[in-house]
Length: 180
Image (cartoon, rainbow, N blue to C red; front, side):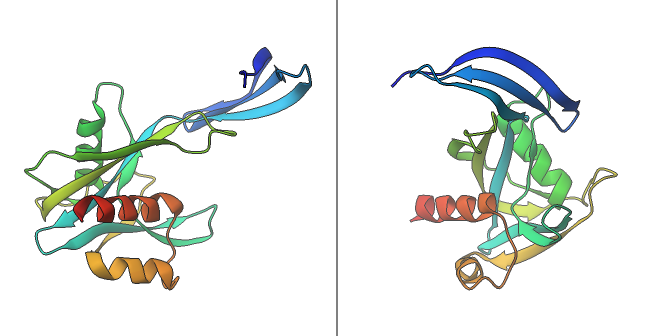
């Protein structure tokens, strides 16, 4: 297999949240796609945060596009001056008020949707977390902290008794596999 060749690039939309570009691409067989849209987003991190009592530290928040309240692992974008580890520690503390004396454990790095997006997500595990402060939310954030028994969360996913997103379910199963 060979890579596609980019013939032309044009930005359709740019914002602090991400960009949309339209590319003209030539496939290895010579076929040309004139309108291939790529969503450019920043890389982000998320973390499965577990307390000494084996409870997951989750956040529940309204998601406009999903039209509902979703239970999720803490997550966010990395700031320009941060390492991935510093970023996830900051995000967890801001969103939940929880910290850990243990270093974050990298569980994996994945492309979000390489067909149309260029960003990656790194998933971490934080163990023996405890609440050390209040939340420090941005003006655009409103979320509540929920503590969920680690072993019961799988049943909540499987039975569909909660609304969550793929990244949370994926992170949970990665953490469960790591902890075996």
